[in-house]
Amino acid sequence: MIDLHSHTFFSDGALVPAEHVRRVEVLGYTAIAITDHADSSNIHILIPALCKAARDLNPYTSTRLIVGVELTHVPPALIAPLTAEARALGAQIVVAHGETPVEPVPSGTNRAALEAGVDVLAHPGFITEEEALLAAEKNILLELSGRKGHSLTNGHVAQMAKRANAPLAINADAHGPGDFLTAATAEMVGLGAGLSQERYQAARRSMAALVERLPPIV
Image (cartoon, rainbow, N blue to C red; front, side, top):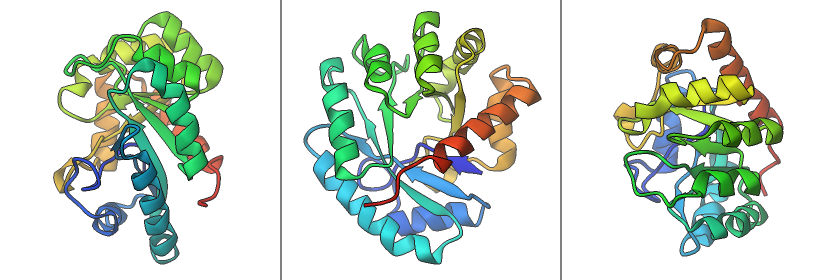
């Protein structure tokens, strides 16, 4: 199991990174990205703190902690410079908080994130086929979300991804101990969105391939 989108108490989650990792370690995860919510006010605090946690924890855990960030509700024009800043600070993975139908995310966020070259576009709502084609071109993973509310458009996202041959990720967007997906619930999210078993397995492979090509922790 791999999850590329989760939150600790550094933003609106419940756990410190050590417990966060331990909770999924007992579920058999090989890797989890902590991607706390960020904008220009806190990105310089979050990423160095997570780099420190990952350097400390990874030698002792079977679950690899991936240093990430989720750019959240920022104006679309700021997504590209913040993506670059996040990577310069040491983020191994950049997630963009997409245009979920249950939050007032600025219009144009999906496209700006894709053009900026983020790694994962989280819960992208009613993403267009044109945007999905851009995700396919740039090999950006489109998220099927296990989180209530964000998951409402999973079926649409899966359909657009199929048309465009865009890669998918299945993430919990976990904020607390009860949110983490098991292997069975992750499969349920994928199949419930209309994926075939073959496409579900392809999504798992896309996530694993992203983890394989991540840069080292600074």
